[in-house]
Length: 309
Ligand SMILES: NC(=O)C1=CN([C@@H]2O[C@H](COP(=O)(O)OP(=O)(O)OC[C@H]3O[C@@H](n4cnc5c(N)ncnc54)[C@H](OP(=O)(O)O)[C@@H]3O)[C@@H](O)[C@H]2O)C=CC1
Ligand SMILES: CC(C)(CO)C(=O)C(=O)O
Image (tube, rainbow, N blue to C red; front, side):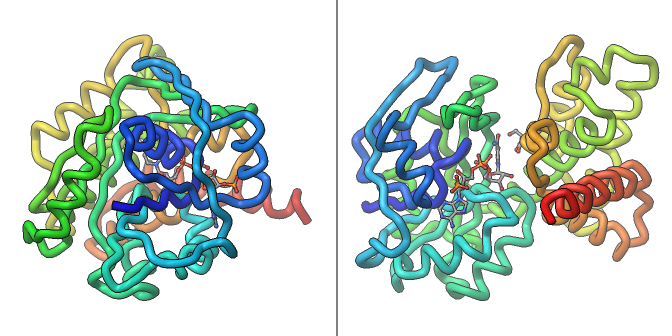
């Protein structure tokens, strides 16, 4: 199956490289500057599983000649609208779109552009960062993708996608309840995004100060309460893993939102935290930490915008 990875950044670059390394037919849709960098330096992965440099097959939007079987969409939320325009010629009637984006809002946006059938549900567990040299640095050993038809059916096409993505150097799971899995991941990223961005440090630094752990656990409770009110209660074993991860002493674990904040880059506040807060408001759920973090990051975003102009 022909795979088009849209965005050769921290997530797309990582999984695309693993798939290419495993012999799958992978092309990266990139923009001019990244194309030049990849041609010059190769696609470089620094990973606890072993470093890797490969010569990727890249394409820019004007060079797309026809549809792909699988699109692995891995741009930030703020780049989604442009990415949809750029990848449109690569989407045909049989194309399946897997998305690495966090939250749920992008599903509606993609369905609006490409129709119900094209859009799969997807969850990505990985912690990767794009460094200043354009290398992809994997920060923890975890690398897993979960995918499924949003209807929950096991269709022939999702089986083909499963065969293509499996055994390529990372964990995979074919889910019959991908919407629940997306909500579970949303609670996870929102909890870690909220605690690291609002409290201003990695998990271990939060736990090192008095009231830190309690506040981190309160952040998780707020996010989980909203998911529950929306009809997607986070299963207890998943919640326990999140709580344990958030309580680890000395942990350097952060979130992609926190790393963006540290870099002075835009943060996905509205799609990850703001949308969850709106769902909370709709169900009269109090979420004071989540609300404070949204305000803190919106002020930050406004400062970024006014510094640019
Ligand atoms: N990083 C992580 O650990 C995790 C991130 N996620 C989610 O995955 C998504 C992607 O995040 P991440 O990979 O970290 O982000 P990055 O910023 O590292 O990568 C995004 C890439 O998309 C490229 N891009 C943007 N617009 C286009 C376009 N129109 N055409 C082609 N390429 C484009 C950017 O390239 P350019 O140089 O051209 O701007 C950039 O390289 C986010 O929604 C995030 O929440 C999920 C799990 C973990
Ligand atoms: C859950 C977490 C923190 C790691 O997979 C993440 O999704 C992110 O950093 O974007």
